Amino acid sequence: MLYIFTETETFTECDLAGLWPLLSEQRAKRVDKYRFFKDRKLSALAYILLRYALIEEKGIDEKVEFEFGPYGKPFIKGMPELQFSLSHTAGGIACALAIFPVGVDITDVDDRNLDCVPRAMNFFEQQAINRSNDKARTFARLWSMKECFLKYVGTGIDENISCINFSGYHGDSFDYRSGKMQVINDEKTVTSVFGSELLPVKYLTKIDLFDFLIGEPQNGKLAFA
Image (cartoon, rainbow, N blue to C red; front, side, top):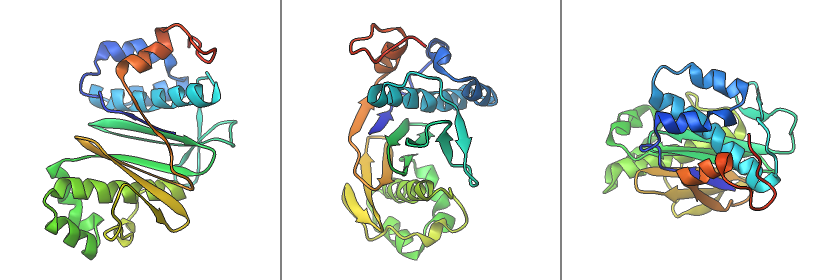
């Protein structure tokens, strides 16, 4: 399933303190390395969404830790049968959980991102952006598709990103190479996810996240961290 959280602007330091017990020691150390609160909360929330997903789908209520592939792709330590991908940006967080390899990216719809067009987009994608009535959204769509695919294959963003061409692909879902691409448009963000199957999408609120920490378990899956 794909989980999306877009209430980042209203997420406060008090909120982070309330959810802090859900973080693993490994994740807490990573969050603490960030100087600014805006970065700390995004890093923490990405992990919190994974905790939510594991409880919701697998009944796993553990402070999981990560191992990393040669290019930095994370895996859940001791759970090779599960695949996940995390992404965050100023406007939201995305988490994909599956039993097959998956990559996800969430990108802000922001005119400032257009500075990246010359180095990130190939000739055909640049043409598509130039012709668009909403250049920032078209860029966000193309960028998120590129990044989620590269996260799926496990290499991450590199100098070859402009070689991938998504200019001829339209719609909310389509086949690409050996998998399926999904694109979800929200007011301020575009989220793309790539895997062998389409994923159901679930939007989460701050209340949903706090219920996992302080709410009463209703289905036997939930437990206090």
